[in-house]
Image (tube, rainbow, N blue to C red; front, side, top):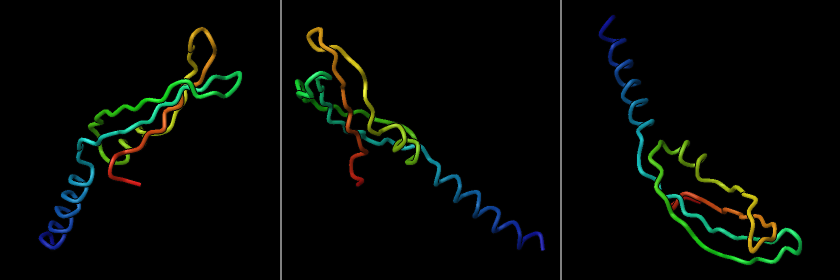
Length: 88
């Protein structure tokens, strides 16, 4: 009886171990700087960086976000459109 239970327990442990492994994921972002007063796009750039995490945490870290910045002493929003490469 104990041997019958040991095999499924070991299989479950292996499955959980391999599914939560940390791997390298590349986060690719397009960054736009938009002036707040007139909505004009004043800068476009891109960035890539590596996230060493499991897939769910990497996707959570690599997502859209905004920052309030100054561009030539004018208030602007820096928009980061990010996604994991090879998905979506």
